[in-house]
Image 1: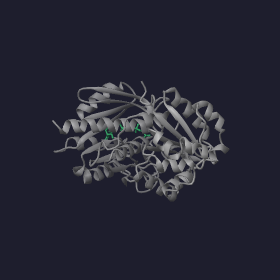
Image 2: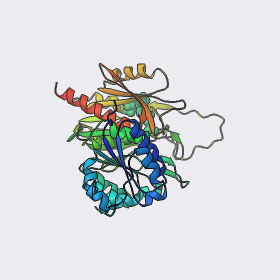
Image 3: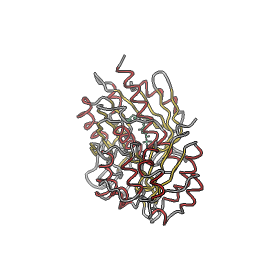
Image 4: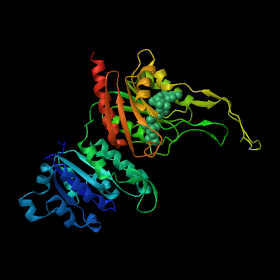
Length: 402
Ligand code: PMT
């Protein structure tokens, strides 16, 4: 049975083109057995008709703060008390700003203030608006106040821009609110995470790297922070915005990543290696651009240090978690890496082919521990990261108590 069966879910809809996805969200919540009450802002009604949401939720949409009829039945206080969960999807930049300063200027913002239930926001806006320090500041304030921000995803936007600001898909939102509750699971822990690719220069303009976007590693960092950990993120070159409330250090090469890890790893309780570290680097980096006169070019490479194995083999090593990216026999090779690198847990994903996780918002993970295997299946990286962090927290506490 779904975790959402008989749960009271209050879905808030604000003004944005992504409001069309809210109809599907409400329908799917109903399919899971949840009781859904929709609240719309005036701006939301410019994008989708309340009647559609009434038909899908089986309840009249609520939209008025000072409604004499409702006040005698379920006013903003009753709605706030009725809800087990509040999910605002889409949450516009304007709504986020109002919530961040505590304005109770319409029914939805008032219910968000009045409710004791957990509040989730699924932001949706143009990528420039998303990146603005004002928006990031408002979100940081809301997160510090205990509100959970889901997404956004990155990609093509309705306005034609390409970047972060797309609302997560209804299925991803439902998984996030019904999935494991990681909050507090790593309270007081220090977690170090590597993410993204490394770049090994051949000359000032060319180099060896791979397709890692950093999305998986940044999602794990965000989930660990939500679980209460203080997080050190060591990131290769990626274009993602830095996650809020996380100490980030940007590096280029595997050797720089190793140096950054070595500097702080002795203070951490848990280490998670999500980075796609380039295994070989050119023995020499040319000082000037290599001319393309010759028909062939031979480059001599040398093995890069294995950062993850070095962490796992330290005296007093932290609880060490690796990832394995394999094109074939993924589980078998993953199990071998768990043993050869001396890890506590490894998350295996298949790369290559059409569903490759590189750069995608989704992934498919299998966790392998020394004595078991857990298939997390296919899901958004945000949901998988939360599940992974929950597993890590459980295994870490189990190991520390023996
Ligand atoms: O960044 P995304 O686009 O979101 O894509 C996510 C991902 C596919 C990069 C991620 O899910 C993933 O699989 N990361 C590990 C990629 C990798 O390098 O796998 P590997 O099997 O080659 O390495 C095994 C482990 O050893 C990894 O934890 C890696 O960080 C670590 N390693 C590898 C080589 C090396 N020299 N040093 C290391 O620490």
